[in-house]
Every structure is written in structure tokens, then in C-alpha cells.
Length: 189
Image 1: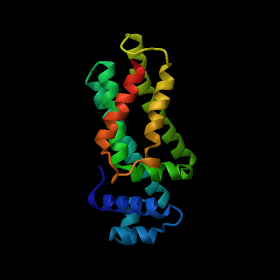
Image 2 (image 1 turned 180 degrees about the vertical axis):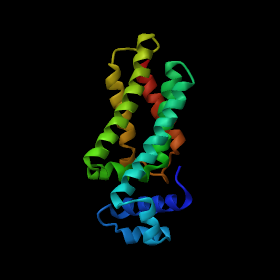
Image 3 (image 1 turned 135 degrees about the vertical axis):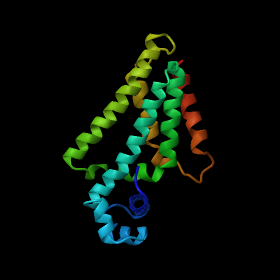
Image 4 (image 1 turned 60 degrees about the vertical axis):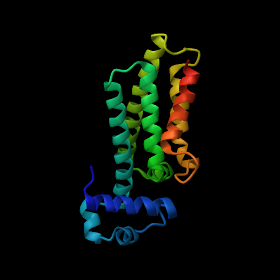
């Protein structure tokens, strides 16, 4: 969990990166928007790249913790899928600027950070895949569509949210989460 000053820096960076892009945003603009000194920014982040990675790290850490918590409940596969998707869609929609910034700027990560990113994304994918496979093996879900295809479609929809979801639009993150979960579960049954 980020402290108050660190969170002010992250929030300012997200707003600026989302509105004008990573390249067009200077460290000084982030400092001004956060109402801090340059020294304070560099106390928390060695570089603008570190700040970009932290935006992603906070998001994926929260989403992974939510998934692990849900799986730990030991619910039937259908309820587990519903809860995972609802949590993932809601957190992505509620933090759509962070998600958009990261998706748009992902290519900027160095090799070490890309390796970390891929490992965490793979862990999420494989954990969700195991839930679908178990539901198919237990007969709760149809196996007409292979589990890996189901996961790619479901996560693909979520990954596209920053392209079209608008916080001021007609659907709340919670309502959208319910509809996407309903859609995926209807396809599995």
C-alpha cells in the first residue's frame, strides 16, 4: 500500500500520462501536479519508468490478491468464475486510467520488468484456467470450447475495457462486471 505522498505522485502521474501521454509528460509536471518537490518524487521513484511500473504493479498486485482470496473461499466453479470476473472487471473499470496508461506504455518496460510482468500475467492466466478446467472436468461447465479459449476471450474482454469504458457512461463498473460475468458463464453452460 502506498503512503500518502507516494499515492499523490502516482495519482498525478496517472492523470498526466492518461491525458497527454508518457513521453509528453515531464517529471517537473508530475511534481507540480502532485504538489511536492522533485526530491520527494526521487525519494520514492528513481525514474519516470519506475513510476510507470509502480502504476502497473499496484493494479496487478491488487487484482491477483482478489483472485487468490476468491479461490480461497472454495466456492463451486461457477461462483468462483463469477466472483473473479466481477472483481477483475470492477477493478479494471474503476481504475481505467491506470489500466489504459499501462497498456499503452507497456512497451517501455525494460527486459527485467517485462519478465516480471509476463510471469504475473501468466500466473493469473493459469490460475483462472485451472478454475475453468476444474468446472469442465466436474461437469459444471461444458467442454465444447477449450478452457484456454474461454480464458483468452474472458481476459481479452477485460483487457479491452480501457478502449471503450467510460466512468461517466451509462453503466457502473459493478453493472458491467455482472453483465460480462453473465455472458461468460452463459457460454460455459
